[in-house]
Length: 77
Image (cartoon, rainbow, N blue to C red; front, side, top):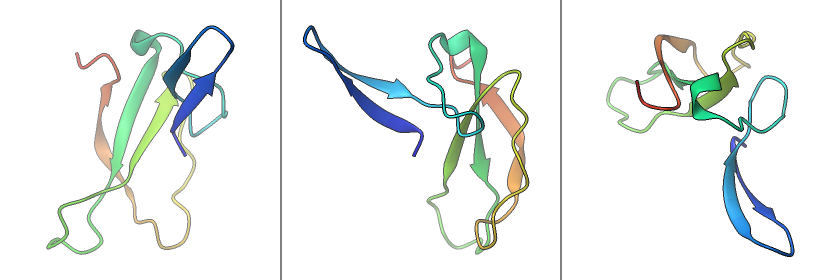
């Protein structure tokens, strides 16, 4: 699950977690997102996966479909 809520005595905030290593992506410039290629072209919602720039995503799990070859950094550039 790439989106989590981090709670501390001082704050509650959402964090993006790398699907490759499981660590938070602290700086958006250090992360990418990829989406699941369509298994059924009529479906409009796809799974999204977040990774650090240095983390290579593994092969898709059975039933998840292939990852799109396109990706973009988390900062939206």
